[in-house]
Image 1 (tube, rainbow, N blue to C red):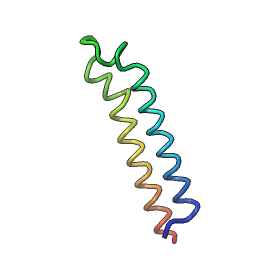
Image 2: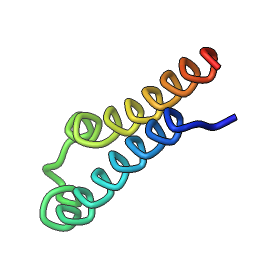
Image 3: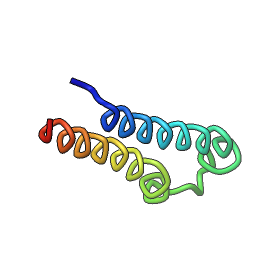
Image 4: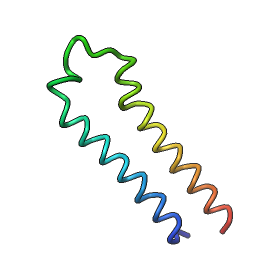
Amino acid sequence: MPNARTHTAFAEAHAKLCELIDRFSSYAKTKYQQSSYQEAEARKDFIDPLVGAGSNLSHRADSILSRG
């Protein structure tokens, strides 16, 4: 059953995802869609933080739920 701690974890993950979306939107044409933008940069700028937000959320939710 969700409680205040799970709500906080989801709110933090949502805020991080919104931040990533805003950053991508603001730089999409000037940086990310340029041929000089490398895959490694995309991974560092977006993929790793996105996966990190999801795994952090999953870990925190599992931890919170297991404590009941």
